[in-house]
Image (cartoon, rainbow, N blue to C red; front, side, top):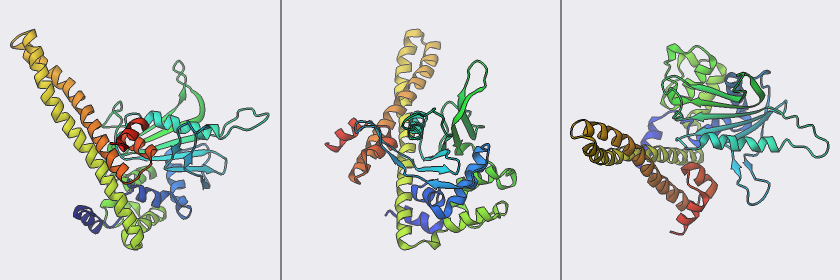
Length: 332
């Protein structure tokens, strides 16, 4: 383990909930399901409050060997048979919205009944807790977005059995004194848990005190501490790779854009043409450079995961590379 990760663990009193270990420690076990129930009740505001949850298997296979499988972070069912997929997404993924649509097909299909069935479905909720902001959203405002099947003409909900709820955590910037709702408190807690050294006054409630008790690293066994350190290292490596790729892509794009812009500018006119061309070229170059940088970093991340014998499907989810591309890398 590198010294920087060791220092982080020694300095932090509570776990980072955006690590796989931290997220599942808080929300993914039977003794702590009251935390998940409280969080989902505040987030979803369903017609009836969730009273109980049953954890279901997180790996789902397609109808044939050729079909792609899905591995959920958390998959639960309440006392009314409604399904809940809860996903933690650490870095931006190009087709994350498509992925959640794909995931929703599994709880839909598993409700199918043999024989004379009238196709009535139980509600399905897909929750994404995102450590990034969608490109097509207002980056300064929207924290929680709820998506439903709606009529484009009337604006009315066509069917309320399928809901997608995304929490864009970077957009949540409230200070402790600004917290008003219970959902505000949950978002504040999840975003800042690993930064606290004590329980803030606004979080002095039974449910939140339990979170802090579970999250205190000092209470863990040596094995649990090591699992958290490994999970934290993966999270930091992933974030660093993404941030580096983003920065490198921008720098490369600016350089290429300036060159293209100057060439185009000369053709359009010595003075005005250069100015417009550079502007246009930088824009094109940044986009091109970011994509190129991201691809290179995705390959680096994939190679590291391959060296650690990580499953192809998990690598594909983490990097946006196809299974075919990953298999080629395995033979490099």
